[in-house]
Length: 331
Image (cartoon, rainbow, N blue to C red; front, side, top):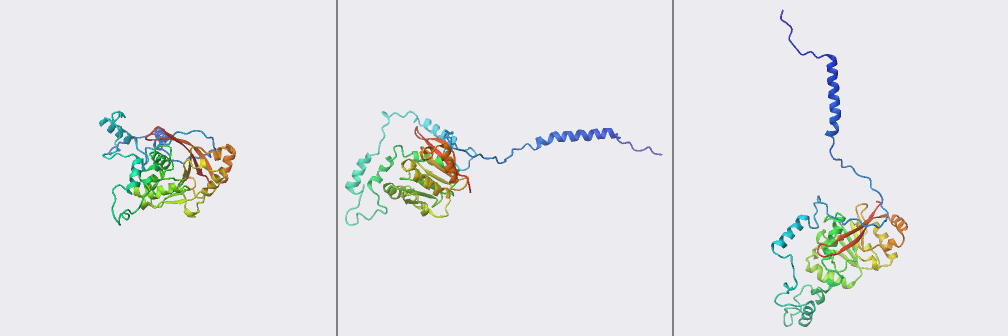
């Protein structure tokens, strides 16, 4: 008779011990296999006005909607300045020049008035060659000096507000008091057609905006809705419009507190819930004069809440602005 085939004999105690060891190994291995980051939503807390300063807003490195210069842009700029030996500007060595026919603004304006232009037609048809006739004061850009600070600061404000509000071209923006479009031009250029709205009281500012800034910047096709008014009446912008951003730059400083509150009451329903933002610059005395608790209650009745205070540095000159942020807390 042939012998039985040889095999591996495992006793029951050894088998039980092996199964137990495997189970323990898997138990300790599971946490490592499942330790991927969790994108769980966090619970938001309601903020009350403490009027403390927060850090200046900075664009997230992961943002795909670039508005302000990146660090790479800044490094490139510095490299170009050094490469061309332009870092040590000296007024005594480099006088600013205005070309072969230097003229100050005042001299340019005098030429425009005296000669009805720079180079002009003669005869009966001398006045019909300009499609959009513009006053001389605007052509020499006198209105760029109306703000007490460089015109370039408008870009700083745009970058801060657009990124703080996470705007995209399809967003809708309302400015209360857009003046001569120092800031508004950048929003109009960035946003889709008809998505920038403004209520402005000053006629001279509106003339500058319509008769110089929009045509000279090639933005007529963007069709911004800019209306004259000072009574915080926003019904002319449409009953169904909802804004992603509403901002007022130094405008509420010159308005009675009760009118500001009337405006906030009318605007609260036109602000996108939770994600929409209202920004007010310089100070919010209309709120702080009531006291923190009373201000919070009044905002709450309007469905608004105070988010925080921000400072934002200028890109081109030593200057910062203070902005106060609000949001709509109910749908």
